[in-house]
Length: 131
Image (cartoon, rainbow, N blue to C red):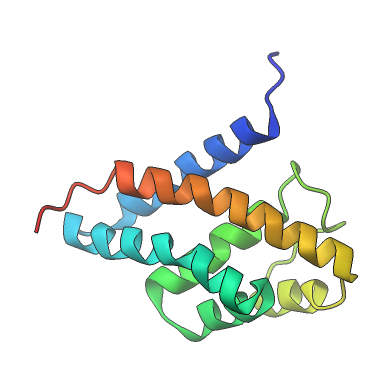
């Protein structure tokens, strides 16, 4: 079995997520809107912090909530050691999230930004919508 770098694991996870998101969209325009939203998420995180961004994502509908779940799934994945167990609900995840120490919070924010770079790249690469 080949050993993957953390960057490769992020890229593989992001590609799988984008493929799943693209497959669930009704048309190219709907995926285009999602891709445009994903591109802006890192700026939200940098401006408001990861916690505020996660809370915002949960207050919205489809594309925002799906982005929340992608971030949650990555932070809880076996490739990261941020949480000892996976949460089944948004509330459980946020409860765990709000109890972490500052250093861990900053590491999670950094990791999310690194993941978002791959999500942005793949979202743009597979955005077929032509205006």
